[in-house]
Amino acid sequence: MSSSITPAQANGLRVAGYFTFVIGFLSFFGWINVIRQDYVMEHQWPSASATVYSMREDSREVKPSSTRQRNFQVFWMEFLVVLDLPQGQCPGSMVPLTTQEPQCTGTVKTPEVESRTDAIDWARRHPRDSKVTVHYDPQGDRMAFGVSPFSIFTHGPKLPSPLWFLLLRHC
Image (tube, rainbow, N blue to C red):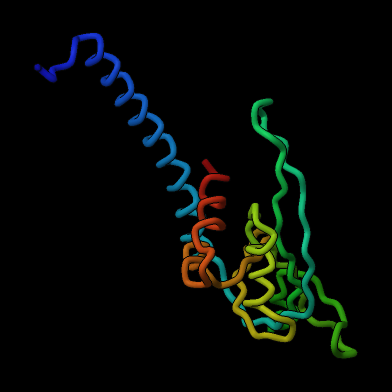
């Protein structure tokens, strides 16, 4: 018995292959943007040593544009950090927190993830009064921990979920 395929089946497989190639090609550009943003943060934003002063958990409901998909929650942590910078170099605001003199403070927001546990893992890795490195945008108020989002793979057993959500969020 011959196992050859018919011309109609060949055309169907060809169309499926082209479709898969186009989807892969388009998602490649989303990944490139995430990698570029991470590169800019790591290599062009200044960094400073900081101390975690406080943290809070936050969430929001995401309503997908498709009516076939269900709404879902995303979670993140926001850290108030005290940067070891003089007033003239402070990218955030000057507030007296632990001393009478104003201190340079800023807020670091972690990537949004679908798992509350993954969001809370950020708090476990950066507890109150811990020393961290913070990258800050000199042209804006954005701040990020001095850890690449790709290094999330080194922080525990539930590894892929935050990274994949971060990558897919930008696609």
